[in-house]
Each structure stands twice: as C-alpha cells, then as structure tokens.
Length: 88
Image (cartoon, rainbow, N blue to C red; front, side):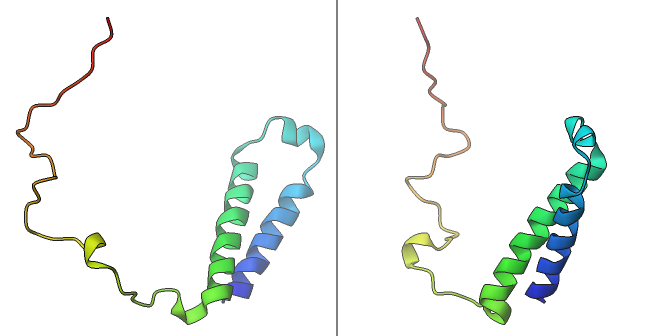
C-alpha cells in the first residue's frame, strides 16, 4: 500500500514539474493541489512502507505522560485570575 501511495506522489509531482515556467509564475488551485497531493501521499507512502501494518500498534506510555481524570494542582483552574504583563 505504501508503494501505491508513492506512485501517486510521483505522478502528481511529475505532472507539477512538467508545468511550463510561465504557469508557475502565478500558481493556481491546480498547482497547489498537485503539490499537496504529492506531499501528503509521499508522506503516507513513506510511513506505510517503513512501518507497514505496525503503524497503529499500541505503545506503552510512561505514567508521567498518561492522561488522568483527577484534577492536578499544577493545572490552572478556569476561574483562576490571569496575570498579564504590561509594558510601560
């Protein structure tokens, strides 16, 4: 699947680079779309090619980085006053 995404990226970018230089001076939605498709499908193709089916595997997260539902004393409350610096 990753190689298919790379093929799509190659096709989009080849078409983008085949655009004559005068049209590149004022790029329109078509050129921006080709660039976005090339970038996104190239990125997705790289991720799928490298990690394959393990892309969405669960990973162990340290307790420090887990979400907790208990209120934290370090987390500001919604009703706490906001201090802002003033320039004089």
